[in-house]
Length: 226
Image (tube, rainbow, N blue to C red; front, side):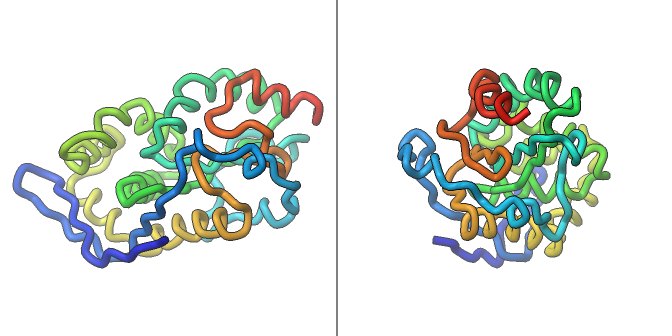
């Protein structure tokens, strides 16, 4: 169930407290390992429906006219998502995206307020730096997402990407960006049955296997479509 929090506080320095106004959604979702096969192997989704971009536009890589479109719903605090991006994403990109076979779309599905904050920060950056920042956050996930002081670590990583403490604060109070992130998440849940992360759609259909797919898993789904 979604819960509202009007005054989410992030500590951004040793004695600095930042008030973040807005609505942060926290949804309790099942662990991907407990998702049933029947849940993950759904009927195809309307291609036109699932390809509608959110208010902030899509973050995607590759040729939009590629024969296969792979959509990933992910959370920045999801360890399974980090595993996929650390172990599988680069060879997947080299094999399919860089060769024009796959158009990859990455969609925000924050599982908690901290993940929402991370996505808002990524959206505040110039568009061409979005994926580099997401990669950096996944690479250092253990440092910031599971820290006793996650906001301090998030600020530190943000400074590596070019944020100042002032621009960091300003970004995290951007209600328009937060609303856009939540729109994508809510639509994924309500219309496409996204219940855990990562969740993939390949040409509008969920693969039979759930969770952080391996390159072999992806190849089995993609190759017959080429």
